[in-house]
Each structure stands twice: as C-alpha cells, then as structure tokens.
Image (tube, rainbow, N blue to C red; front, side, top):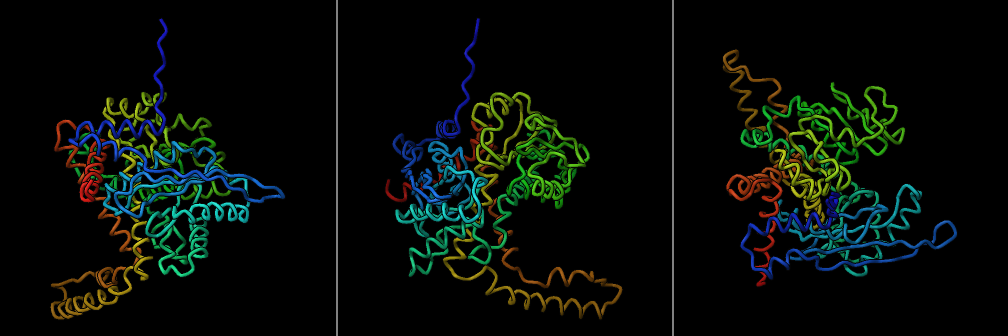
Length: 478
C-alpha cells in the first residue's frame, strides 16, 4: 500500500504554523489574534533600468507586517528567489523579533529579484537607486515610517546608495540619514554594525551556557570552550559568529558548509583562513587543511555539539531532520528549520535557539544606529572623558596606597590600563547588544521553564513577542 509523502510546509506556512502553535496557548480575542497574524500591506514594484544598451525590467517588494509601532523595520535582500510569500514571512518574523528584543519597531521586509553577481558595481548602483526611488516616493523608505537594513545580497554599499538617494529626494530632512541602517561608518553608520548579527549569536550562546538547567536540557555540560561547532554558510553572519566563538570562547569549528561543498576537520578549522580562501577562490574547494565534501548537506548531519545554520531558510527539513546528530541548534539565519523538521528535532531532544532571538543582533544594533542618526551625536562623545577623569581619581588613590604599602599591596601593573579608559562607541554598542540578548533570553526562558504547556524556546519566544504586540495594540485602543 503506497503512502502519500508528507508535504513540506513553505517558509510562509512554517511561520504561520509556529504562530498558530503559540496563540493556541494564549488567551487572545480571535479578532486580535487575526490582526497580529496578517500582513498589513505588500507593495510590488516593476521598474526598468537601461543596462548594456537595452531596458531590463526588475521586480521588487516591500512588505509591512505590523504597524503597532512605527517606524517599521526590516532588511532588503537581493536574490533571484525573492518572492512575495517569502518577503511577507520575513516581515512577520521582524515584527516578532523586534518585540522580543524590545526594539521600538513594527515589522517590514523588502526584496529585489536580482543576482548581484551578474552585474558590475555601476550597474548595481543604478538598479539599487531606481528600486530605492520607487520605494521612497511611496514613503516605504522613511526615517519615521519604514527603515530598511542589509540582508542577504546587500551590505554597507547598497545602504549608502539608498541613504544618498533619500537625501537627494528630501533635501531639507535633517534626519535623512536615519532612513536606513547598516550604512558605512563614514556615511552615518555605527561601530559594530557589520558584525552585529554574528556577535548576537555569540552572546545568545553565552547566555544559554550560563544556565546549567538549559545545558542539561540539551545534554551539554561546561562552557563553550572545546565545543564542536558546524557552521552552514560563511557569509557575514556565519563568518563573524564562527570567528568570535573560536577566537574568544575557545570553540572548535569542525565543519563549514558553503555553496560548492563543505570542509570538515575533527581538530578544527581556521575560520579566517577559510574565509580568505573563499574570497580568493570563490568557494571552499581546494582548501588545503581539511577534508573536502562535495555534498555539503552531508556535513550538516555530522555529529557535533552545536549546529549553526547561517544562510538560507529551510536547510533543515523533513528530508534530513531525522539524520541531524547535534545537541543544540542556534538559528543564525531566518527560518533555517521548517515547521515539520522542528517537530522531528524536538522529539529527538535537540534544543533549538530560535531565529527570532538568535539573529536579532542585527536589528538591535540597527536600532542603536537609528537613534545615533536622530540624535546626531556618536555614542560616548559626551561622557567618555568624564568617565576617564573619575577613573583617574581612583587610580591615583590606589597608586598612593601602593606607594605607602609597598609589597603588602601589590597592585596589578595592568590594572591601570584596563580600568582607566572610558567606553567608546564600539564598547557601548557591544554592551547594549549583550544586555539586549541577555534580557530577551531570560524573558523566553521564564515562559519555557515557567509553563508546563510550553516545551521549547521557539514557542516561548512567540508567546513573549505576540503578547507584547497585543499589548501595544490594546494601548492604541484596538
């Protein structure tokens, strides 16, 4: 007797399924439950750009999921697979993500169907500026209404072009730079934004590892030191997460999976060397100090302590979920685990730190950048030297005591250089990000361990986020 294969839910369906799982455990009025779930609006634009002697037509989207807080916030991705369903699902995730980490934004997302590798820099600038123009004139890019950021296929360069385009169209707007985040440091950006999402993944893992109870739930002990980690995708997020975990926390990166295959080494990979190899050679193939596996997906199934999917959605799905051997998954990408795979992994006892929390470092530091642009002053400028002056008073007194007491005191010679400097912008950004990730994790953890009907962090994250959105709507009188 033949059996009908289980249908894999789409990314959009996965988000809806996970939303439904959470609201089933909440006491929301049906009308409010529906209001939070639906996407408010999606704008589709088709525009032409004259390239290589002829007009080429491009299709782009900007979706606004929820305006319970404004502006709405969410990245713009450039990829050939961009479609309306994907953009709307990502916009919904942005709503919940911002609510979870208490960034005062609604959720939005944008995308353009384009392969940036097919065009040179000048052509990409023309395409990006035209796309930005189409969105700006409809207030779908605006410091007080809709603030994009980088996503897959975009970065500082594209954000600088968009900010400049907005400035050209709004010549008297003093807050024009705040129309987009993720800009270069010299173009209104903020220190620490490029590595923010990867840094957030690191801080999320550190907070998880502070709890013996949570480690026990995943079958883990000790610290991050020596933990075997496999990273899927060595783009901006995966690279920084792997680099920081290896260099600062002592983790061993045993596997790196890229488009053209994967590298595996039980003794650990040098993340910086692999990154340089990819830049020079376009892929991981041929890297000398590791085993190359042509079918990169197989390395996802290797035994490890922590698996970090940091690229595309749906890489862990119904087809391979049964073969995943890790103890802990941290979703550095958006939607890397499908709803069907999520059920299988949880049944196996694998703990998942969900995407809406794990990759929220980007939007958190984007929030800091937006605030910086609106305040027109870099963080630390007013208080840094005052901090140093106060620290100097303490150092002077300790040095006086050291001179009096001599060997009985033994003041550490390095104390002065560590204690004296005031915090600069980068340190303040890292401090703010660390605090945000800690507080958000504790809010999820409280629901995870405090309610008998919540058995996983993802459901806990959705409950916390949806509850905050619901309270915002109620405060508006809805």
